[in-house]
Image 1 (cartoon, rainbow, N blue to C red):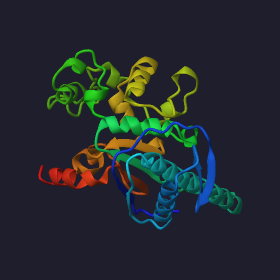
Image 2 (cartoon, one colour; image 1 turned 30 degrees about the vertical axis):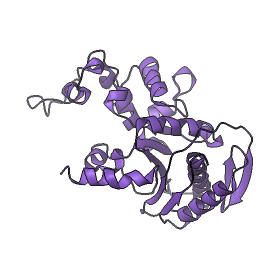
Image 3 (spheres, helix red, strand yellow; image 1 turned 60 degrees about the vertical axis):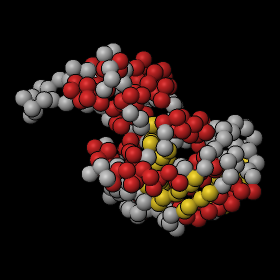
Image 4 (spheres, one colour; image 1 turned 90 degrees about the vertical axis):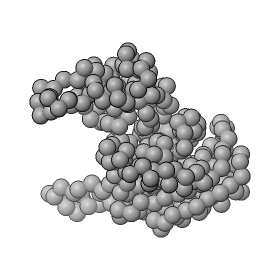
Length: 288
């Protein structure tokens, strides 16, 4: 169990195919892994390598032919390991509470999973694969995307530069900085004032946040159930979920990562199509 502050990184290359089979197979490779069908030998080998890397807090570079279900394998392995970690933390906390019934024990952090892809379209495919796993009912997720995909403002969403126009509406100008009474001109953003991620994850009934969703589904949920901004709501959920789906640049570009206050401590980082990461890292390096 990785309970230190070191980030575990997994890299993989190649495309993947959609899988939607409901047969359930359970087997053990260090931890119990629930798989939606009988895995191929290459998937079993990948699962073993991933679990071993996670247990030892090491990096893991994987490559497998197209059509062998790499995405599903990565998701099931990482989520199975995370569920084992959650179980161990709960047992440890229970034992500590029994031994120190009068003392308050600080909860141990749970390792979050960052699943990164090159494009938003690939994130949609990862979300679909996640919905095929048994873990979809055990975890919470968020999907980080750009204003181009998430903006629902009636004017800004139709404009050519959503980032600039959104900033004008949601950030006070120089004359208004420091004014506690500042009110955004975007109602979707303003209705998030004072909200935290748990305000959405703990809800029940029609306003309940879906366990797994794609960009379109999340946009519709935010707009129809709460009339809030999907872009900022997805960011608000970061510290209250177990898995975060995002494009490469959200982690690689320090300006984006810092603006979202994303900490990578105690994290499992999965980079899909790792063969593209060198080019993106190089391009971000020379932006400064």
